Image (cartoon, rainbow, N blue to C red; front, side):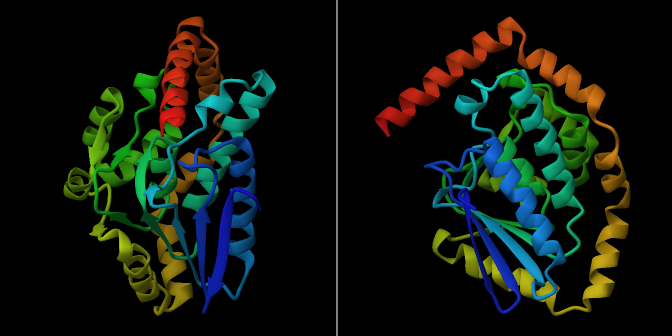
Length: 257
């Protein structure tokens, strides 16, 4: 695996996203994460999983610079597999905590809200789903997952305006569950997940799946029609033009960073 680091200690797996400065998600990362989640799911020596990132960035979401250059087949494969990753994470039967180490917009937020609990580092960071202002149609499965945590009314409003929340705002509305000093982020996340791991795992896991049954069913439904709409808009000339401007801005920030 080249897009993250994985360590396992006393039954706890820690998956640290590790791709570039901002952990932008490309197709390779998506495929590697799917494989890792499936492996950890079936590894009886692993009782829980923490997903984290680098100081300053959990993940900036889909790597638009790379994804913009994908052809139509590559684009369809990326988004198909990303939705499959979301489904695998949501249905992961073991305890899973997100240690959000920094900025977590868009796809980064999606990874975080698949988890059972979210601890976010203090700082001037943002989290949320801002796909619509970027020109990307929000898949129903993503909206369903967002609503699971925020409630339908608030999720609808936030999605339609592409709202990105500061750390204290995210805590207030329940998008994250706890705030930690950056230097103690992993310790805080581990303390939480080990409380889950100490419980009877058959009881805990089946209860988790029961509570998420409706969510899992919706995420497992055929997404092809929604994906077709999403991809048609992805290739629309006005969206491509907007993405091009956004990418130029991203590249200039990378150059000056």
